[in-house]
Image 1 (tube, one colour):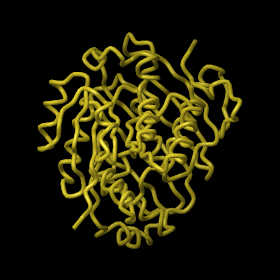
Image 2 (image 1 turned 30 degrees about the vertical axis):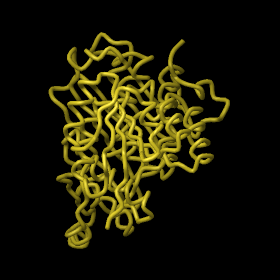
Image 3 (image 1 turned 90 degrees about the horizontal axis):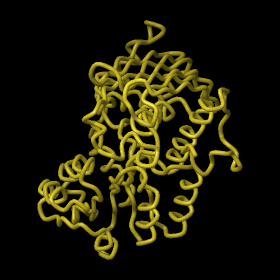
Length: 356
């Protein structure tokens, strides 16, 4: 019989999508609690997971020894503190992005995870789906060759309705703008394929909405594998779309444009040498199915916690690089220069990028 992981979801906003994913994996997870200060909202979300309890007090969740995993879906300014508290309570943690508001906080989380023996799983769900599964298979088989250039697009539409949540669009509440709330996923997907970023030059602006934080960005980056990256980000598009176009030595990859499940496909794989197209097609055909988005991520979490082989579960080190990259981007935009990574421990923004 499959071991079921007992989980508590904290926050019933994006938490609803997480609960739906756990419900889809009911043979793997038992949702025991949905916790939100807004109890009616928690009760509504809990209906997706029969048998779960809606509660307003997180202390009740932490005190229950039967809870194995706490899934944090709160506003960003609470992520690091709640992750640390959950670890201290002896729980494994899934945490929505951004995991923290500084590199220093990520180090603190890593230290506490090591001390308590509890694991932290950052949410990077874009890599789950058939399209990305095929791209990753080409990487594993060594069929991609050297990465040349990658073009990323995060072109979404966000207006007054989105910012009705008072914490959104504020430095204190959201910890940033498009960099931390929208583009971080596609940036992680890029680094998973072509390596961590070692140089970045950034232009940021607030052009679409009357908010504190940036809602447009133009970024140039270089990765440790030499790939040259451009990332175009805006919240002023007509509708929502995300896309990757990646030119490798042997294959050019073009993703689909579905913004929430970009990993699912359809993705296009074109051999640089047409005579190798059949080999590329064979490598990407008839792969084992993978759950898309949150179900895929949570299935990997279950595999890791029960001692089985996960597919490509996001690591705490990846979250460290994600936060370090955000830090470097803000530093580059403010200083008007190319910033090199990794950043030193005495970097001026090590303790956070929020403006004074």
